[in-house]
Length: 166
Image (cartoon, rainbow, N blue to C red; front, side):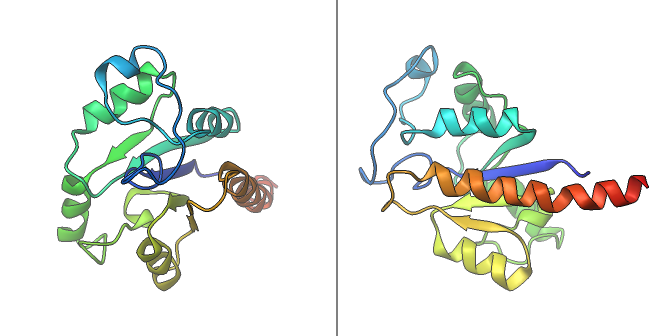
C-alpha cells in the first residue's frame, strides 16, 4: 500500500486568520517559539492520524520558513512528513507538476488528501481528480469528518494491497 499522506492548510485551517475559531491553549516549548495558536483539536487529531499510519504534512502558499513550522509541531510532539510552502509549490508549478500557481495540488507531492478551508482547493481537487476535504469554521467537531474520511480512504486502499499480494 502507498503511504497515506494528509496535508493540512495552515492559515484558516489550523491557525485562525481573524479569530474564526477557538484555539488550543499554548503547550510546551512550542508556545515559547511560535505565536500562532492552533485550532482546538488539532494536536489530538494529528496524533490520532499518525497512530493510524498517516504521514502529516502542512501545505501553505505562504512564505513561512519550513523549518519554523516543522519545529513548532515537533515541540508539540508531532513529526511532520513535510512542509510545502509557496517556494516548493512554485517549483512544482514551473516543473509542470502543479497546474496552477495559486491552487494547491496534492498529486505534485504524493499527497493522498488535502484538508483545507479554501473552497478553491476543493474545486481544484474536483477539477484535477485528487482528494480534498473542506474544513469549515461552522462545526465544533471539525475533526470527526476528517478522521472518517481518512479511515474511508485507508479502507479503499487495503483491498488493492491485498489483491497485489495474492
